[in-house]
Length: 181
Length: 293
Image 1 (cartoon, each protein chain N blue to C red):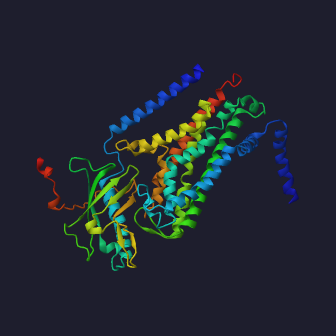
Image 2 (tube, rainbow over the protein chains, first blue to last red):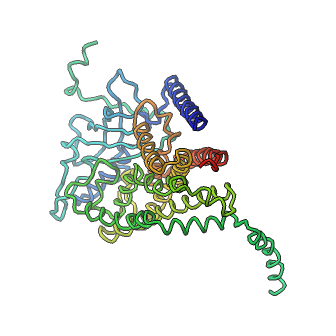
Image 3 (spheres, rainbow over the protein chains, first blue to last red):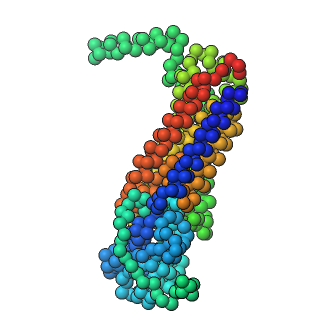
């Protein structure tokens, strides 16, 4: 019994040591997250475009394609002081796309993302541009709006080179604290 | 034909002689363990629940006015019958699958302690190693049967109750029904490696604690702690080491350009956990002084 207790103690100590060591390694490794700005900027426009086309289909609109939409995103996490990597509900992506019938008055649309540590995210679109939670389809039925809120996942080992997309945010939404510097 | 069958018979002869000499072999002990398990009410009830619970769950979810949008595919449960099995898979991986396998794996060694039957089973002239592997095989086989029954019941009831419409994937792309069927099946299959690793963990805890309660509850608790650790930001480098991460590797199958990296690393993680847990369990059982009781 004593022997069994001893081995158990040693075993649990070893486990704790391994965990602490691992935590230590992680703390001293910079940017270890698979969630990055570049991966989100590649994933979000694709997911959005697919769903936007489904919305167009529901509304009975034609003539839009993935290529003609040409959606692009510029993502940022938690403002200028926070590094743009890692999970969190504070990711903001500004997105542009070409729909002749829906112009973007601000030049872009603001999407709020909750990015989870498992490389999946939930994105909410601006209802002024993408519509409300439900839409009325071409047959007059009330159906869920595919782009109001949607999920997506990306490859944690996918292309991580910067996309080079820069979208200037509309001046009206600039908060007063931005001038605090 | 007759010339071929004679040497086969001759080859088999030593094995037969082996058995009559009193050594049943791992497969012989395995057959016994399966018989013992099949006679247990708990095993039967578990399989029955795996068969019936998904049907109830699908009916209840279908009746929901507001779909459970917090989980992946939750928002599409009314649109496609292929979304439900994926929602349920994501939910099952959180604690249901570890619990289902631990119900047998966490008990299969410890119940010999509980009933004080170690000496009895060892006098069946099966060696400790044979008993260990037979019990391990039984627990692993049960885990796989549970997974198959649960997956089949979930998929069938979803398709019959909701339908087999096309599915919106994790890149927003539309997946045709036939492809979705294959992907859902494959997704459920990817739960097998971590499930077997949880089985090995339950076996280790069962052997070491000698208590069925610990053997069944501890793997579930460990799974939930891993789930929590895996969801935290800042320590994501630990994620590949956790046994709950491989349960999410199927996400890569549902995007437009499929990726398999997490599946590969998940299989490696599961194998390492499995080997370490079984090695520790085996040495622990091997060194034990059973005459002491």
